[in-house]
Length: 314
Image 1 (cartoon, rainbow, N blue to C red):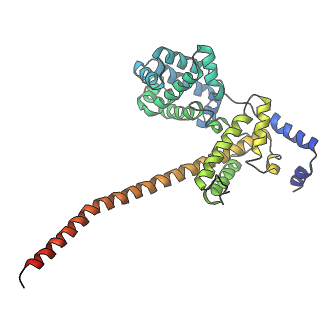
Image 2: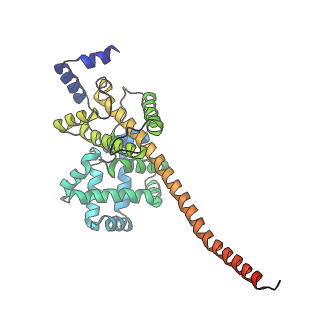
Image 3: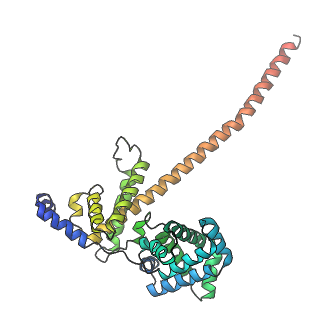
């Protein structure tokens, strides 16, 4: 309670000091390898070995390169260049990978991003790739699949899935993290929707929070000091100020990660519910459409019977 009171009674100088402490304790973006390693619970060295094997397998498969090339709209030669550079930059933070590859290969960043995205899609959709990687490199097939899945979330669209690059710090226990996530999941599922003129449904609320938290995390993880300050300003729209001021930078990121993951979980549930409802509705409408001809046929039969009855002599 004393901490909360201190926050509200803090002078501008003290508030500025608190903000600066949060900013300076924000962790730097970690390399893709480290993030994937943390997710799949294998060493960074092993993760890098598997990642290298995956990339080499794809580069040496003309059919896969052609598919990626066709879907990304980038020629096969440049596609291969991008993937070669991708492997070389696997120890770069996810949000910087595309730009780094673009600088190295002189290929537009948008095209680089497109290639990486399609590369990731192919890895997940074609099981033969993971099987070949495991077999040819004497690797555990389950580990290969886990690396492919984790890497997909991190590198395909890092700015849109920025929380995937945030690792839980040692100052936050897994139990604490999961508790925060559960709390926000319950809130998004059953809590009162903060209705406004432009926000009228639970689904809209959840989607709005995902966008806001995503943008805020991107700002907080920026290498630019001013952008980080803007991100901290934005946090005020997401969390109570007394809570923010009692967290370190890395704890704040972990909290936001838990919150956005809760929001994404609930969004998936709401999307599935909507899909089921629409299917049931479509099925009901189809049933009605099928019944209409039968009803018309029955009406005609009744009319015919009535006519025959009227024509028969008494």
